[in-house]
Amino acid sequence: VLVDAEKMSKSKGNFLMMNDTVNKFTADATRFACADAGDSIEDANFSRDTADTAIVSLVNEETWILESLSDKGMRKDENLNFMDMVIMNETNRLIKNTTKSFSSMQFRDGLQQGWFEMLHARNDYRSWCQDSNIPMHEKAIKKWCEALCIMICPICPHWAEKLWKGMGKDGYAVKAPWPVADDEDKILTRQAKFLRDSLKFFRAQAGKAKKGWNQVSVLVIDSYPDWKVNTLKFMQEQYDDGFPADFMKKLKSWTSGLPDKKLIKFTMQFASFTKKEVEDVGPTAMDLSLPFDQKSIIDESANYIKSQLNLEQIDVIKLDDAGGADVPDRIRDNVVPGKAYLWFR
Image (tube, rainbow, N blue to C red; front, side):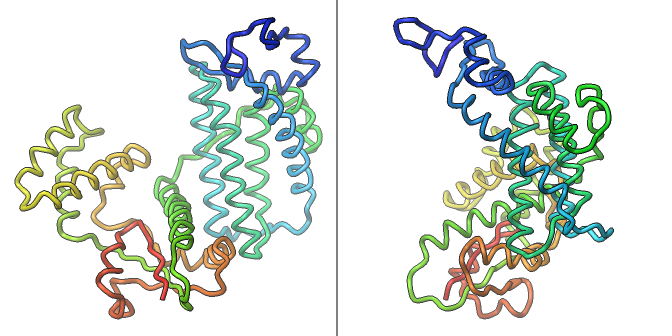
């Protein structure tokens, strides 16, 4: 076992005994760092920073969960908005992934999915609700909190049991049924990724924008140019519950008939990107048109986007409609389905 990526040695002062480690970091934080130490055949790496961070994270999450569940201002109606459905779908997806990881003794992956990715999903949801001035939904939060508590229980049982009691649950968390996950909505996963990736790209654009602009528009488009349509059709022909092992070789051969080297380069890049998308969300990534409305997602998240980018106002222009006629070609060329673009002017 390594400690902070170095071999344990008394001369280095990093020789740890289990009792001393538990007394310093608590049992749960020690187990947390051990689970994060690695699942491969390589030497496990116990990180003291991870153990320290775990203490703070566990305390903060317990406080937030109990305060949130006691919040009488949460929405309780049956009307779920876009992000309510996203957090519930992400919870379903991560329950299944964590279950798979723990079943195969991959504790580091299970910790990544059942703790870190769960927190990231909650953070996105919380920020969206705060910036949109919309209370969180009780159903979504309860599902997330209960799933998090039970999934972290194999690693941090003392924390989980204390939280389980704090949530007013009967019995013990360790004996509670494992969370039940509904089927993941792959389209909703793509929609969430579209918003997340768009915001990340918008931040990069805003940081590079020239001074003097007074108006900002989000540009979206539903249709692909012909060369991308042809690429997607080729990929659909090759796909049979997965791409063949020699897919890239076949792609290279197919692109050799294209008219110029620049187009070949763009086609290879687009196909590689789409192939990864297919691996993440399934064959719907090769659809010739997007299975969701980009404009409606941006419209519903407008306050969130404005707050995150410190913008006073934005509008959304769909280039397929007449409203996009005034957009210059040099700007229009940057917009593709699934990738929105900020137009500063």
